[in-house]
Each structure stands twice: as C-alpha cells, then as structure tokens.
Image (cartoon, rainbow, N blue to C red; front, side):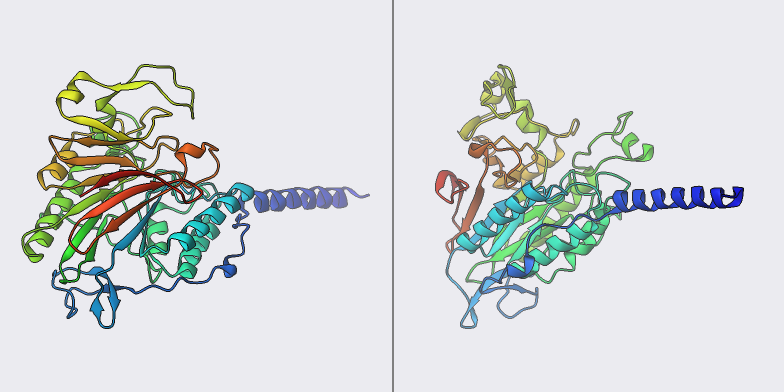
Length: 402
C-alpha cells in the first residue's frame, strides 16, 4: 500500500470514528411509548376571553360550559410533579403508562405539572413528544418549569425554548412572553403566568400563580444581584414578587374586589425548611425523624399529613418576600415538588396558608408511599378540597378543605 493510500485509509477511519461518535453523542432518545394509542378525553372546559359574554371577571379564565352556560359541577384539577421523562426508556415508559392511566381514571378538567417534567440530554424530541402526548389527551394543562428542564448549556433544549414549544400547544396555558413589572423591570425566569377558573356567576373562583424558581444563575451578573459569589439555584426574585402583587391587585379589582388564589412553584419555600429541624439520620427514602422548631411552633406551624424521607431542598437564599406577599394577599396554598420522597403538608394557623408537596409521579424512586397524585376540587359555592391519592388510585388523605 502506498503512503498516499495509507494516509487516505487513516483519514477515512478517523472520519468514520468521528461520525459514529457524533451519532452517539447527538442521538435524540425518544419515548418508547406508542403515543398514537392515546385517545382524547371528552370534556366541556373552554378558555374564555376576558370579554366573553359568560366571563364577568375581566380576565381570561377556564370554565366548564354545558348547554351554553357555565356548569355548576365541581372543577377537578389533577396535580402531578417530577415526571422525569428522560433517555432511560424503561422507566420513562412505565412513568408514561401510570401518567396516562391516572388521567383516564380521574378525567380531570385541568392538569397542573409542578416541574421537572423532563430531564436528560438530547431531549429535543422528548420536548416535542410530551407536547404531542398532552395534545392527544385533549385536557388543558398548566406546567411550571423545574430545575432539570434546560439545566445544561450543551445537548439540552433551553428553558426558554421548552416554554416556547409547550405554549404553542392548543391546550397548554403556560405563557412564553417575558413579563414586565409596572416600572418596566424584566421578571426573572421563564413561564411566569396566572390562570383562573370561573364559577357559574362568571366570576373567578380560584386563580393559580405559576412562578419559575428552578432556573440556575449561569452568569456572574446574574448571581451577583442576589448578593452571592457563586453559581447557585435561584429563588423567587423581587421582580417576580412585584409582578405577582401587581397582577393580583388588578385581577382582584376586576373580579368584584375578591380573588381566592394559590401559588405553584417547583422548589419548596425556605419558610418550610426554616420551620423544621431534622433530628435523626437521613436514610434516603426512609422516614426521617424531625420536629418543628420552638419558633415555628410559636409562629403557628402545624403538621396536616405526610412524611419527610429526605431533607428539604429549598433555594439557598431568599428574603421571604414571596411568602409575605402571599400571606398579605390571603393566598390559600403553595404547591411544590422537587423533593421526590417528601409528601409533607403543613399549615400556618396565624397566616392561614398551606405549604404542600405534590405527590411524586416518576417510577424511578420506588418509594410507593411518596408516589401518587393529588386532586383539587373547586365547588360552585367557592369551597374546595385537596386530596392525596395512592398510585392505585385509592384515596390516601384529605389534606385541606375550605
């Protein structure tokens, strides 16, 4: 073999290796699930514009419509979190199977997703597939981002692009526009928005504020504004709190001077971690010994239900502004996920607010007592109840009512 031929063979071999390596690195791993087998659920829910004749709230809102009027039936919301659909095909298939089973069995009017719906590299196809899955189900859905969507700069769909993709789904209520405060500041995070549900009188029975507290601070100019000197997970920024305050006030005024509302985030508030002291050894997935601190007990925190099986992983810093604003405005509850094996619900008797973990969706933890789903039922008279269900669909606990 001539020298020229040897060089050609070497170059061809190197090129072949590079092509194969690129194929492996950049291969998009799809769901191992026949999404075309999913058929849509019949439902009567519509998104009514602010100026719709049946909508007296002045804000866009969901309503169950029957015979040309808003129904007096309960409005049922299915809460799921940490679905973690990833490149591991077996666990992802199992998770989708239980996800679809729960939706079919409960027939919710709305699905709320508490973040970390997707994770893993090379996820572009899965971002699209999840949108298609939800389109096939035909149920309105409202996600908030977790810390795993777009958590790497390389080989992952950015958080911004995930929001843009999902918000194009005809029944996804997430909004992709960048919010601004009244004084022109940009609201941090992606997918900050509010959705509402109407009662038979055309006024809002409940609103849900979705705030992104899962983004990472990737640049110095970002984390410096928080007063820290390293990259870290974000908390809720002051701009987000101000946007919530301003939006709440405007909606309340248009809704006749009242606005029952709740908040959905991915990571638990630091107020929860500050109230609890873990006194036993942490054996992940097993019950942890803990108690409320003396100050927390004095401040009115009480346990409603659930178990700690790990420490509380809240953002490492925040100033309490969101919690204070929620309490001031009379918010009823804050829902979150993130800590897979925790299912605690606590209540503050002084502040009249619940902090509650959503039950875990993914099958990967194999901790049955932490897994399942939650249902919030909104009733025509303005009352509601929030319940936990086991993976089998059997009722597990009534967490709060009003």
